[in-house]
Length: 555
View 1: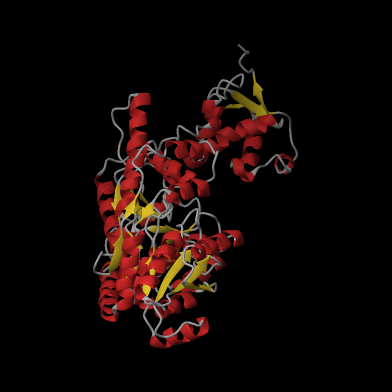
View 2: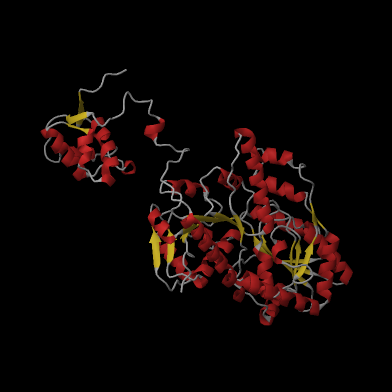
């Protein structure tokens, strides 16, 4: 039986969930893994997909079929179908951007459905603004922002605490509802990864690497500014080579969005390890990624950048059974157990307060995001000596590599497989539903940041159309004449949600026979159409088809 209330509508467009694109980002791989896992493991009776951006259904169906197929009924929701979101009970947004939807939900009542978003990188300007805005948006206790790692969650908490302190100082706010943060890790499909002896031999032959040579693998996006500086990895490999007294090989799998960024990363790597032989693998297809791990003895990733929040690549290496040497940094701390699945290498950063100049320049667009993140990364030291010692031990001890690799694979299977992670999402949605249903119903309300224009600008016109204003047809019109003229270009704008043609014809006929007040006109209109008919009267006045009888004098 599906879990009651443990379902959510998935905001779906292809970009966040498609890792088959050229040079995918980590969030693309994470999104694809989530959607594939949700289709495979979610305990639901149907899937709800919200096509917020009106993307071609054929493209969305193709994505679902590639990752699924679903095997259960699919309920497609249009961009305005918020009753459909309420039926699903919750909405999953693949970014932290739940603030805008919280305001949109307000028009339907705050208890209509729950909202969940998820963090990836949290250092970019618009994401910082989105997270900070959660404190002033109508986010409720039945909503949650999912943080993918404990260090990432603490970073979000630090930001929210600073914003809350500002609101208290600036506005004297005494009650600032906290945004609910929940830690659920990203996952991996463990069955996709394994160490294959045949692939090992084939790739080593293709790359010109002796079968008995020590090999480290780094895979990911190449960017000094927004991923990591390769210098500490090169230094550690150089020292390991000297300690072993033999040539060490370094396979670098991945690339960058810009050619010059990739070249800069590769050059920086080579500059710090003159005796290490580097082999670049530029084919970043999923098949090559799944095979190339077999060519290595150790996975190496010394992340130092605030752009990182979780880090999928160590998890993929663990799933394959490859021991890891990683920096003790951000989400790597949640995945790799030091001395069990590999080694985490100490990192050291300046004390809080020594980056205020970088923050100021970043906030005022004096430096770009890449320069901000890259500058902070330059001040994050990774213990090269410890990294070299870890690599040396692993290269020299096949049994240690096997034990750590097997421990990592078991951990990936037991803790991080999407089969285990997806139920955590469903448990969260069920708990949010329980809270939402227990809360008093909230009435529909306007967004104070985006007011009704006829409220905000009520002082602009001479007068507003009142219930006792008397209207009449400007003159007798031929059948169909008014509708034809009102359907001219620039007169009928679909975005304005104007009266229907049939409503216009009935109105003109009634007001040609005798004048009527606005209240009399609205009395016979269906309740759900009265707002559109009422404001449509001003539209018909505008183009001379109606006129006011005895309008009130101007003040």
